[in-house]
Image (tube, rainbow, N blue to C red):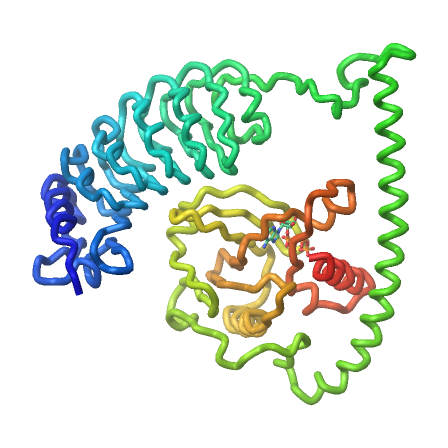
Length: 437
Ligand SMILES: Nc1ncnc2c1ncn2[C@@H]1O[C@H](COP(=O)(O)OP(=O)(O)OP(=O)(O)O)[C@@H](O)[C@H]1O
């Protein structure tokens, strides 16, 4: 196989220039092939170039040596997070045109953010949190039109936040800096948590959707009042229409479901506890990386390969999606820009063995309209379930007037605890979700 010789030399120069207590854990022996064996290095499919470099938590120290990483011109992801690197933002990185993920969080970098960052046009994830960067946010960041996640929290940035635009941005964290002034219009869609720990103000929204009485008592006959009446009528019409539709659909589904359930009883009794009501499970479907019983690690099921570990999950940018009966669901953005949903279960009384058995059952179910369990994690204090992220919104939003939103699939625990009327309804709402999907 071809060896990326130029990249190999650049990597060795980089390593020689950073000190660090644990740099010895980086196994970059000149005798070993770069693409197959070098710690933290990922190559392109043809093995000609290094495209990812991830060296987190290795106690690397000092500034990033010049003219080293800049030579890795095919680099798409660079993670040097959780080291002790210092000095100014490494200018070398500004010369990497294909960089999509840059993770320098939890180091000791300082100084201003270079306006040249705006030249990294492919950047999707930029995490510079927990450093000592200061100065203002360059307005030129608005050129990063592909940016999905921006985390600049826990630095010493100051001044006003420019109106960045950034239409693709889904995660924003500017908390714990010295920023001031109003939250700019294009960033008002982010919650207060994104700006906490600064001296920023959120100006009152001027959208007509705000109830006028919350701002000022409306004058009789004023145009604003007229708009309110109209929108109330529209809302009422949507609610009534929605309820009628919902009842019709629920009635049809209840009948269909009850018939189907009756039909399933016999076959389920025959197939035993592991019987799959959707009928597409395969006994070989579980591909566990390591045995679940031998320590606390993420246990993956088969599917499109997800290459992350618990550490990655813990360091991912995350936001709360919502709380369900069994815990809180978070949307987590991993370093490679993969988005997953992590559900943190609360009050699980099951022991490890019972929990694993339940997970194995759930993990085997395959259906187009059911969110597959991709991985799980068990420890005494933490039980996590990992799902793919479905971006099209919820049934609730849809039923409450967000007509453009489409529902996300339901979770399987509804199927496994269908003992009460409430749960029957939960199953039906899952089925509605499945059908509308
Ligand atoms: N895989 C997913 N993709 C996108 N959004 C999700 C996903 N899973 C859950 N959510 C969202 O997260 C929120 C909480 O979901 P969660 O599964 O924890 O509870 P629930 O299904 O709403 O309620 P319950 O736990 O009672 O069934 C919901 O609003 C849901 O829309």
